[in-house]
Image 1 (tube, rainbow, N blue to C red):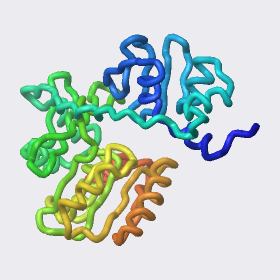
Image 2: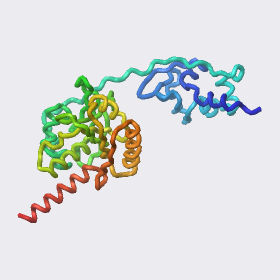
Image 3: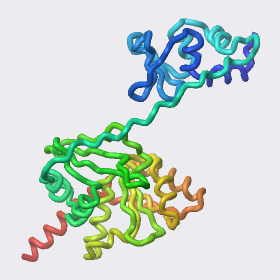
Image 4: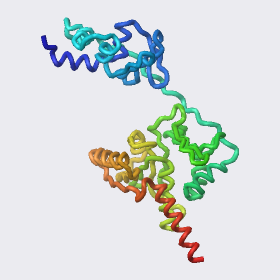
Length: 310
């Protein structure tokens, strides 16, 4: 007999964590972005409470049906019947589990000097020294004991809530966020006076590079402070709602994401989303892959031109 489609749909959305607690009596502890089973430490259920992976068995999936079919070798029908009880046709009520408590942000220890920071940002990346100086003065930028550049994002109470790291050694591509970082509080610069425009970037270096290009184009050291600037630390818009809520005057969003497939797709998606919210949007992609690449090309052309003139 065919199983009712509503029952199947109900089974597919059953909470894996609640099911394992009720069905097997397993207990779990939240650790590292997932719930770990105390009886079987290699069994993990992600924070969405749907995705699981049993590392020692090499088996994973999404949903209770996947678990019962792949781990306990049930047929599809048997799995659905276990989840819903078929008679009656309602799934067991979900077990309430407390959401994980947010981790406190741990900032890396500050270095005594910022020599590597200046060499990396100003010499290698071509970023305007005055911009770097101001961000250091505002405690938004510093060098840690390992020589990494640390970019800090603050909440509405001026409390550090996000810290992104960037390696400086040689051609090092190391980057990452410190434990406890909250991406709602992106690295940002508020305009020196109320502004209706917000420029949005994928990274703090792109933010500073675009600002440096504006300074160079106008010859004005402080022109970059005329408008708001925000780094997303990627292409998701987690940081945008918080910033817009803080600065109500903003009406226009300028999306300055990377000129690659991910950046272009994200720019179109975010543009459409925020138009629906009543904002003016504009996509302003760099000529190269990102705005730091554009800045470095500008610096080389400027140096070459002045060398010829001399």
